[in-house]
Image 1 (cartoon, rainbow, N blue to C red):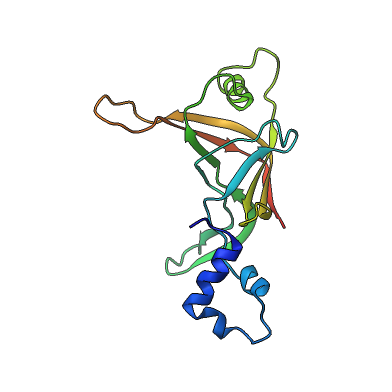
Image 2 (cartoon, one colour):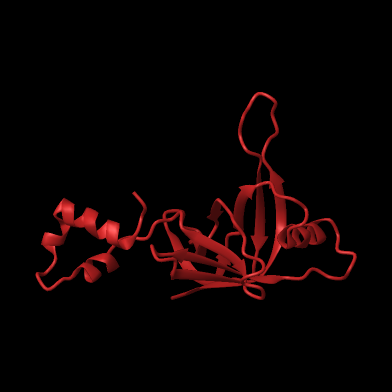
Length: 178
């Protein structure tokens, strides 16, 4: 069955979950309570949202933390967490190996293998989590991202797996939109 809000509402109705909602709750209200699926997302560059749309099978590393444990001097029993400037994990994008014609691949190649045309060109990257209709439910914007690592999965003659490339992007900061 195709995942749509209508189908999700039907599944919820069949499970008795809708009976737990107030009687004024319509199918539309029930549909808005459906949890998003993690496999329906889009990655694109902010400066060229349509031309540079990228298909990735996995996006990870979207996290930040601001506390650092600090041991109390002379007293080993106590550790305090103090607020500090946020630290960000690298954004990791995974997909099947693609051709060298891709603007994304050219950008990574120019950054990691030496850019003959000038300095590194950071780009803003947007990751959008979509709802059943394809509208953005959550958006993460990564500012001034640049590739710091490009890795290809192991190549083996005894397997039948697709060759996967992983690109790690460092960035200045990110913010959540929507």
